[in-house]
Image (cartoon, rainbow, N blue to C red; front, side):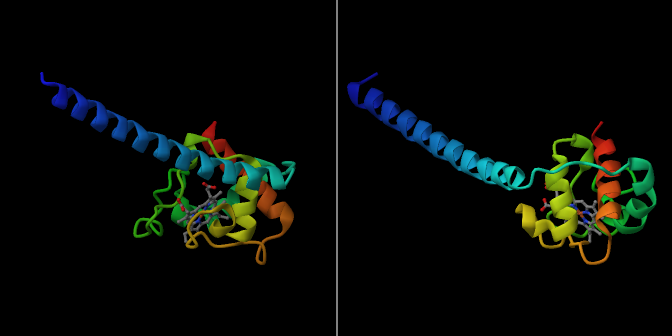
Length: 136
Ligand code: HEC
């Protein structure tokens, strides 16, 4: 191997390493934004899953699916797809915010409608409790 090739390889590796660093920083900036949104509301879950089942079936299942997998008939044509709740990684506070104020309030798609004007706080609490169970 000549010195030039070694240098080229070193340069190319450094270049890729930097690239990955930048991607890493980008991801972190993204998740810390979400953390802030969560920290903004110190949410207390008071709903019960049992009471939320019917409203989930009426208002959410068409997009998020009866089993919460994000595969409801009304969601299939949507990009991005409705969230899959079975991964269980959406905190209750963020869940409530999305349901109440819509997807955009948590940095997600606007096709996720807000329910704050059509459902009561208790109804949304119960739906959140029900939705969280998909992740358990
Ligand atoms: C018209 C289809 C539709 C309906 C109806 C709907 N959603 Fe969504 N929902 C979506 C889409 C699309 C997203 C955004 C996915 C994305 O941006 O990655 C979403 C996102 C969400 C999120 C945000 C997830 C996150 O990552 O923070 C929650 C929580 C949620 N929906 C809960 C519900 C609940 C509960 C109901 C019923 C009260 C409901 N949705 C009704 C389509 C829908």
